[in-house]
Length: 112
Length: 109
View 1: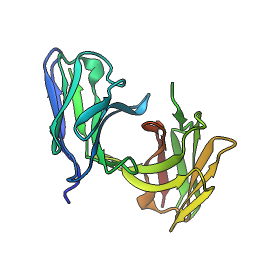
View 2: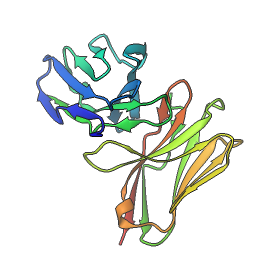
View 3: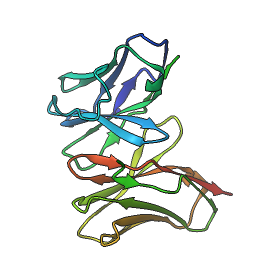
View 4: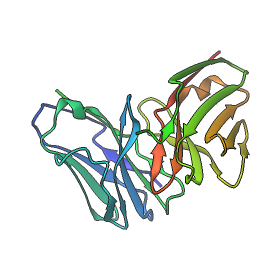
């Protein structure tokens, strides 16, 4: 299996622009997670889905953040409008049950 | 508030010696703990785990110890190798996975 695939690997945008991050989970996994990594808070859970249904989005920082999972093989995390404080590495992870997370390589987001 | 804490941001160890990475948690309901390893520009990868019914789990050079009364776990790497240089994240499973802020390990050849 190719593992969890995220795109793009790097995104540089200007403040106020819309940013869309994409994720393809491992086939057969029923959980999908979006994390943000910062120096201060480490790996911070933003939202997770079970069988394509959002279960907990309490970690989404503001209404500017939204996430969707239209089918079992694709999810997006959107930031609109983006701000410089959103600059971070965003990881997608998937799992079968909640035993062990498999992470993608991440998207390095820089908002200027 | 951080429910999983790694108070040492960095650690340097000589090759061949033992590396000990520490992690504390606040919620006594956590019943499953994991360590992840992360190289630069890559996602975290699973290293080793332990259930709350055990106090030790070993996998090759890696051993995780769990002290439930102290709400503390540690990862021991023996012997340490330069390829072990990475950031190590501790995680605990409650209603979700809670991660610490990571410890950057440098193994000096």
